[in-house]
Image (cartoon, rainbow, N blue to C red; front, side):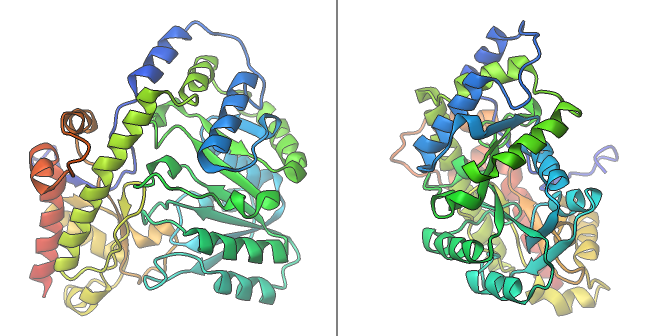
Length: 401
């Protein structure tokens, strides 16, 4: 479409728009000559740095000997499903790779659909009801993701405590994907490992909060009684990816030390994402779309069901058809709810509101006093394409009715 001269608003790809912090780049340059094979589980100093980071930021137990480093948390998640012979439980909407990984690994998958009214969160009552009725004797692996992709929402401490109680009651293993933890918009992320330390594996990495998706460095923090599972994953890793590139590991060790520069970087990332996300929500809501204000990350999960009858007159009854029509008529690219394991006729979609020049916006934010909130005029100047794309979607929705 772009080659034909059409303007396209790219809201589909969930990649951090912000540049890697200069301190991280310098660390990588410094260690570029490192060429040795490192331990499969990760270099010792890095594992220690990751453990300290989790203790300091999230107030959870983290032993360096129970940290595993991999080429992205995605690879570690696949190894986990490969090594753990059990049933995978996925609250939906959920990230696009969880279910396909389970299918490749030959695992049984159970989807538990959440609702807009539940803010797309799994409730302890709904989880308890399923587990109490399940006749599948296999080990249960529950995958949670918060702040969430695709919805940008998170769990409160009380909600996590309730889920922890149910998981403990039914002896469920939790994979807590907290890759967006540092992009909680108020910096107040709470890990479920605080309430269910014995059964939670915490997944994270550098791709989202450090803008380093291409570095491919992910981490798992295991509880003591799941060390056997970590060992099994290391055995498989030794026969597949072997180890993460040495320069990346050495550089990451310095990044996880969380210097003042990193803290300032995160502060401005959050400062930008929160008001921009809220502006997008207000604009879409005014056009008749249901969407919750984000509490973290850079995603929205709009529900277009109030427009169902109007869409039906256009021959649209599925999220796939809706997204295709939206792209064709407005040039706005968003992902279908179906891609996130929602039912085909669920008129939901994921919108990643990060199609702006992250380096320029970050620099502009640093030139404005922190006590001043970034308002619409700021984004009109520095994130114009994002605002225009959202306005185009909103206008399309209004024209439907």
